[in-house]
Amino acid sequence: MWIMIANNIVWFEATWRWNILTRALAAFLNMFFNFCCMDLCVHGRLVCFFDLFFCLFGIRQDMRSLKGTINTIGVNNYARVQLAMGLFTCCCPSKPAARCAASNGEVCSGEQNIAAGCISGDPHNPRFEMSDMEWDLVPSSLGKALRTFWGRYRLPLLVTESGIADGHINDERRVRYLSGCLRAVAAAIDDGVDVRGYTYWSLLDNFEWAEGFRPRFGLYRIDYSDMSRQETGGLRLYRDVIHKHRSKHGRSTASTTSPGSVAIQIDGVTSDDGTKQGGPTASTSDPVLANGVTSDDGTAVTNAVVDC
Image (tube, rainbow, N blue to C red; front, side, top):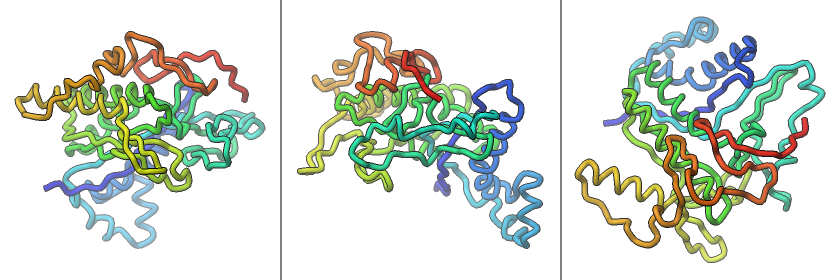
């Protein structure tokens, strides 16, 4: 029986690897945001000064009692945040509203943005293609999370949430991103990480709290006027991958060789990161979103001028 908790893992990293202070801050935030809860449930204690700090409040016994209370770890991952530190950060703040796709007063996501003094953190780097939630499409962050959690805890992992908001009807960004995530999971398994499964968020379009019904996460597109459902390219890709995986392991499943198969609908999702290797380059009407994905971390090529 699986006994687990699932945390939202936001992977923090330094924008510039040579900046030691920013790298230290990223390590601190990963420790505080991503590892503290799991440390308690697996080891019954926190790392050094975190453990001492909370023990001063008289909860040492409660913390120790949590040791071994889970046997599996759930991983929710959608975004990574790049941290930057500079003297002019305060004078040149990020402007998430300027790149928001909504023009009718709807709320756009800013929940992953960080700003404090000379420190800033943003889930969107202008060099990268982004989702409708303004998060970079970086499948490699899921692979990093899986490898890190496996190396730290040595417990089976289950990807409980992973997905992308893509409002375009042909949802080519979703196809590329989902392909990249599945390949990141497969690569982690090949490296010895005990990953028990991958679940996509979400089967249907859903209500996204402050953003309302604007983000389209679903593998089925919902027409809210009559609640009808329409298959997306992401659904066809996911269905075909499951079919081929089960066939490889000798398990029966429904055939997906119909004209709606992703092999016919989508051109060339063939590389390890979900990069399109053939057919027309994916594009979007938003000039800030880039055309095409070209590297293993989702970096996109764009000629857009990005203001400070």
